[in-house]
Amino acid sequence: MIKKNQTLGEFIIENQAEFAYSSGELSRLINSIRLAAKVVNHEVNKAGLVDITGAAGETNVQGEDQQKLDVYANEKFIQTLTNREIVCGIASEEMEDFITIAGQNGDHKNKYVVLMDPLDGSSNIDVNVSVGTIFSIYRRVSPIGTPVQLEDFLQPGNKQVAAGYIVYGTSTMLVYTTGHGVNGFTLNPALGSWYLSHPNMQYPEDGRIYSVNEGNYVHFPQGVKNYIKYCQEEKEDRPYTSRYIGSLVSDFHRNMIKGGIYFYPTSSKAPDGKLRLLYECNPMAFIAEQAGGKASDGFNRILDIDPKELHQRVPFFCGSKNMVLKAEEFMAKDP
Ligand code: AHG
Ligand code: MN
Ligand code: MN
Ligand code: MN
Image 1: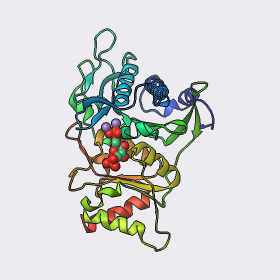
Image 2: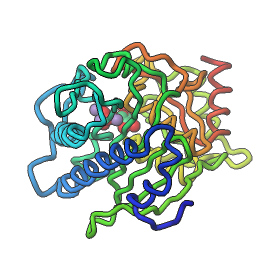
Image 3: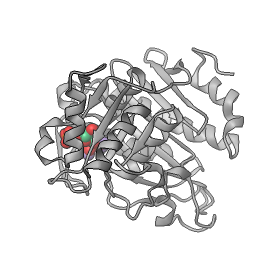
Image 4: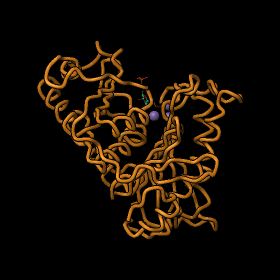
């Protein structure tokens, strides 16, 4: 039974029977993520005080300037996910290749792979605006006992066993699903404990917020331009409200609570869109669907896409079910 304000530890123990695999495995996975989240949260919170804002001086495989906190968060999550005899490999937005993790005695018996966006919205760090972390977890498909393979990471999103995000906002929250609904926990920073503050989160079926980087308008496909005009039209419950933070995690979180749609379409500048299928779209799509929302590339379900490469990008339309259906109607007419 879900009890508001119980701790994350209590929640995991009471609900672990729902996890399709061994319950101890789920606890160990979530434990390492909640620990890393606290460490990163601590660092994000003092970002203005210590020398951790600004660029790290390197460019990542995405062609983006890495921020110091991108690198820090990546390292902290890797450290905490290693050494727990549970994760056999990690892929990250910030690393060109996946890393292989052996068990303590050098074997390859660990069963899960983690894919992550260690710091989402990193352009917002220097201006004190919310950032996040996104994670996605699969059970490996290659034989246990052998080192993890690329195919373990290139599974369609519908094979995820868990996914979640942390939003480092006015308060810090961990929101995750193991395929049995979505629950949100808020960190009490004085105690270092997470409390169930948002049980059984639900995406409202309809919404009145649209979130898109409208500066790219001229580069968007006609269907997207028409949908934006539809959002702005004075008719029925429109015009909608426009809200765009520029951190997917924060934009998603707000829309899931209030009702809305987030979209990052293709454009003449970014023919595949910008967001990364494995680190951003799949985990958010899993959470959205588990909360009764919908996630699409404008035409098809995100979770059914067969990934071809680690850093693959896709157009992304995600949010309240009826809003995404409406956007898809516009896309079908003018792709
Ligand atoms: P990241 O900081 O992990 O690279 O992700 C940035 C993403 C996403 O969080 C956000 O919604 C989007 O990029 C913003 O892009 P624009 O600045 O092009 O709007
Ligand atoms: Mn980035
Ligand atoms: Mn991101
Ligand atoms: Mn990132």
